[in-house]
Image (cartoon, rainbow, N blue to C red; front, top):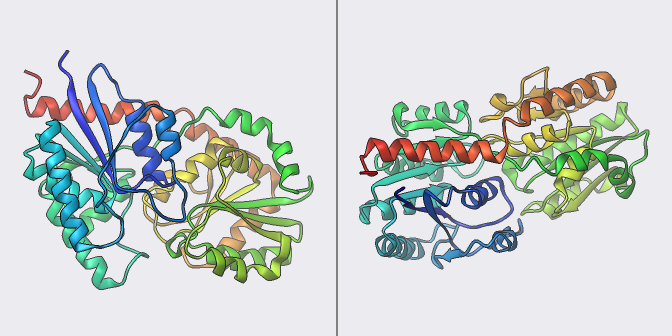
Length: 388
């Protein structure tokens, strides 16, 4: 059987859904068919790093020092040159890029290196909630330009395809939907440890634990969760709130929630997300923009119902009224009302949680995700007659 060389390119390996997706795609690759490299710039930022986990899995990180997240024209030019040289030297058959910066530079480099197959996964979009309009328009232009040089664009949800097509990025036939899978194995044990985790968090049996997990950045909408918490506590005084994660707004959000004392706690970066998800009674995703909302799968795997904003690909993950409740973004009153509905109805919480777990496991497991990605590679190999 002929083997093909694959390069996965991502800007950094912080603790995020795109990074975990990329890591597991490399880790679980069919090594009899694909020789796979993981290429990344330096991992910097407040979100933490998955690089230790990558190395523990025996995966070498091919470093491109000039590939950085911020806009830096000289570094960007040098990163593209480094990537081009790397692609030429290693003679990759497939270059698969991830996220915006690595996606743009990596695809241009792959074109210059005459790579036969170019695949890109945006892992969401930056059309809303990230930058001023003029910056967003520049990124949209870049995506349009790069899409013309891409064989397939992988979107996490059908909604993501429509959002990109609405911006005239690519053609419909270029797109395919492949979800971002999660490791389901820790969740049975996490559910079994639910009471133990709640005690460790200082949550009493009669208290309703509401939680969020994510980067503390404006686009994640945690300010609206703090405002919603005040409204919830007026009618559900036994509610308690936790948020795991960090980011640029960490100090600001802590200050905004200071008057709530221990009723609203920020836990910082955590490595026990399955345990936290299983300990919650309600999970909240208050984002202004999401490609898919991978944390919703993690909540579902823990049998925890979700209240989530109806943005991006979230409506493709949450079945409204069955696995969770959808609300408009930027509306703390709507968030609070949905949490209160679930607070007052333990039966509904349990039913939604079980429905969410049934929807997630095993359909959104990592093996299914990687199998679909590699099936796409095989289709492109056949399409281009590379397996002769």
